[in-house]
Length: 269
Image (cartoon, rainbow, N blue to C red):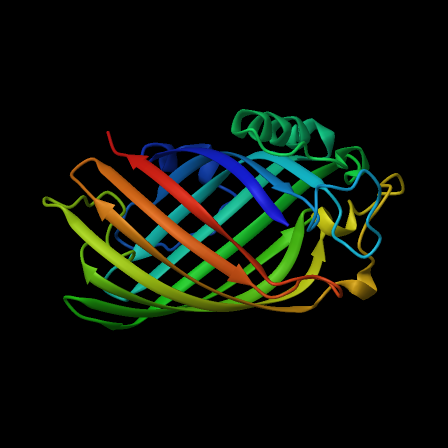
């Protein structure tokens, strides 16, 4: 299902003073918000890439590529954090997911991926998302928080809730975004959540799609999806290294539970 993806993000508090922040929801507290420019690719495959035919009871191949912006704002005193994002891009072959997967498998000496010619057809993506979190408990070594989130647009429509327990000494997500640790820090967390799904173009095709050779019908989409995961981050003065894993229940009628891992390298300058 979600099989690979890569993203580049450049963030600056200076950008938050530009016109780019105008359409973005944010907290109006004392802390300076952080605006991030995003470029992202998402790639999806069915459960098997060994069949050069359409698998009618499986998820379709799909690729998405987009750019956008994200604004993060926080209020440490109230224990509040908000992130809002706006993306624009395209679904379909222009994402080059098939070519990328062939290149990766060739480099690893793995099997040749089959079936990308049946991927979801091209469509325009435009999506807006908001994620808000509240701290329920905080101490020197532990933090408990909960959140609500939602997405709306031509890519994904859903609403959800999360709960997170974080252990370790270090910067809180509610601290000012420009605050950096003076010493090496390590934190780990566990997270659970539920999503209520309205629409997913990577499975169902774009809103006006009549050209995709294979899609998941609206009746086959699972409307409630449970997820859970964990992660850990090591922070130096100007470098963050993070690894996380996320697992979700089936997203369509004949689907399987699955998960993926993410590696993040962030430098501050």
